[in-house]
Image (tube, rainbow, N blue to C red; front, top):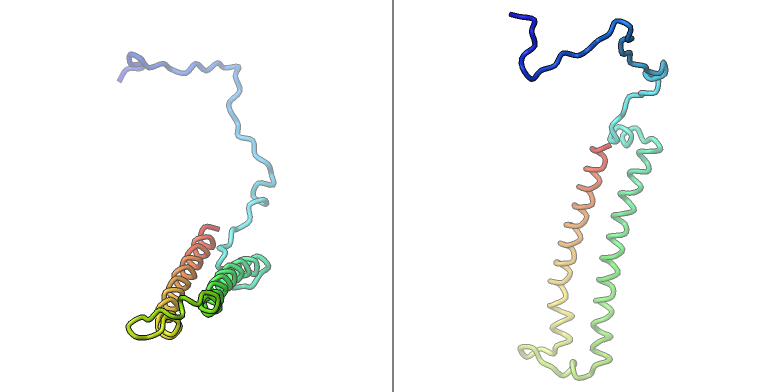
Length: 137
């Protein structure tokens, strides 16, 4: 092998009077780095941070439950009120059964099932978001 540079390649110019590069770091660099604990450990050990995480999950789930209960409450009280305020609806028959009876006795339960299904779906999504948040930390 020859010491000649290949075409198109330059050798770095180093002069004898130039000092070498030195990396400068703080003596406290190692002290500033503390071990990172996963958030699951914070929750398991019930630290202040773990309590904040759990409080946020409980608050989110509570808000969802209150929303679903409010909607169901409005539906359950709103239907009889609607039949009271609109007398024409009371006179309609659905397969030989008065409409208020059909709605209140039979059609309301599928609405409850759909509401419960949506609640469970949203609650599971909240828990997945919480788990992702905890794992990211």
